[in-house]
Image (cartoon, rainbow, N blue to C red; front, side):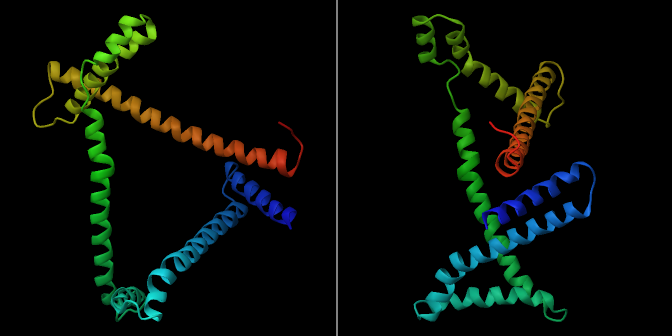
Length: 219
């Protein structure tokens, strides 16, 4: 049985990698298989981990009849498939979008925006780093002493780039150019990180094919 599932995994891996040559039926099959399996996994997970413990069991045991409201609103979503009753689905859909938008705003504000602002509010001159450099003079301790001033200057330059209410000329223009360069460095680092993840994933699949399945290579 293990060899059967390993063969299926190897076939799907080769089918996905065949897209490097060109779009073909094997890649289409693997793509549709992945989407179908992922959708089925999500449906089963939601049913057993969300619907059964949070909706069906409290209702069937009479613990909370107010859950009939989300049950009816969930059922109303299926009126989308009726041309005459599809307008009913707009009400639960609008509520879902509103709730998720509110949760997203709160989550972004507390988990991203506030933390970013707090991380940016650092002293320009770090006394501990100066004392560390005085006690252990060297290239690394000197660069560590420049961390906070460099970060503050870079942050101000990036903020100047997004300062559009006045014309960017003179010293302000050079600060905006510096901010643009720092943004490009940040975007490049993010892109490189994405490429590294894709290459790591490719190596993992090649390791599975060559070492674990075909056993034509060793590490």
